[in-house]
Length: 222
Image 1 (tube, rainbow, N blue to C red):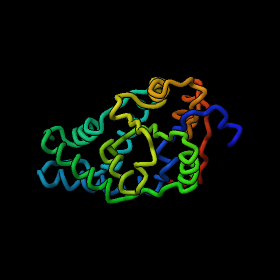
Image 2 (cartoon, rainbow, N blue to C red):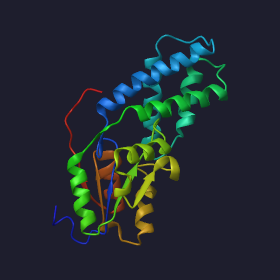
Image 3 (cartoon, one colour):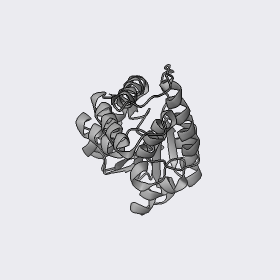
Image 4 (cartoon, rainbow, N blue to C red):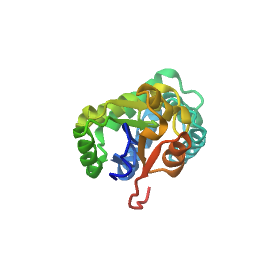
């Protein structure tokens, strides 16, 4: 890694499946989300189809297709979309209530931290190399993401945290990668990006001109 670090001014990290191992975390969370949605609809006596799991799966596929185009979709919009697909009589009060329930659920299940990367970050900080996060957000809001980082004790390790919900764009949009480049007044090749996805991280960052390191992980069933 030493040769890669020549002339590197900042190092950016993807969050999910890079700093966090979210495989089992997301699986458990999805089960709780589906139950929370079911409970909410029953609470307001709103009839709904039994296969809520498929509704969630279909919504995620649609979201991922938009995400591939670098277009961010607000998590509240996504939750409202899910609810309206199961019952068109859902109102904003119910949407807000389910959003709150999802926030609470997200903070209940803590993802596993990649300790190897934390060691790398500590070494970089010791050499005064700024470390930042560049992450897309989904049903886990930016607010909750920041709370998770604080809860786990990682928040203060990063000079800046760029989250798609807060900036209105997402990876692989090249403008997302250019935000820290402009902020730190550096050339693209002076930023190293570390992530797990060829499409969202490696290819996208390289297209901007950044150097990259790909994280490989064990194949787990989702």
